[in-house]
Length: 163
Image (cartoon, rainbow, N blue to C red; front, side, top):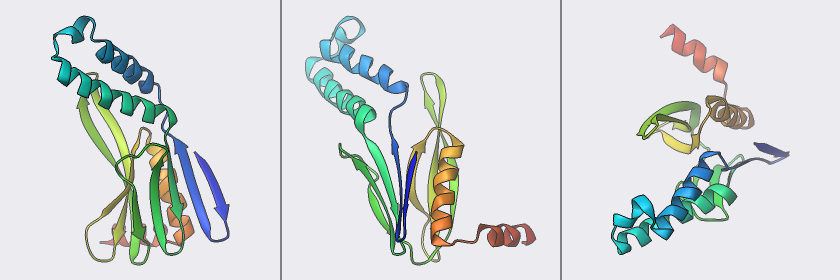
């Protein structure tokens, strides 16, 4: 992760590349050529699957996520390929942030990802960014946002313990 601090902005950026991208790339090539296991899949379905897997593989190799924090908003963007989850969240009224673990069933067992959420004064919690494979990554982003916005985490923890 890279952090750039300026007097009016903090920008956190990180690459999407993981070792799993190699597996997805090999899978995309296998589906595209339709050999072996994929030969029984109808051509139209195989082409759609190949296009989707190729897009995911390329995004995994080249995409970056940028989180920009200012006094007025937090913006999350993914580039150069478009991806879900881009958003701009107003910082006015955010009382705290937290990280949450999500488990997904996969062919290898369970995949675990972490996400960072913002808690506004009124309304539902807002997912800012997710897809972190390690808890420390999510906590780092959470703490950088809290530090820039001046959110007092110690006071919140003390109040939670007293309740």
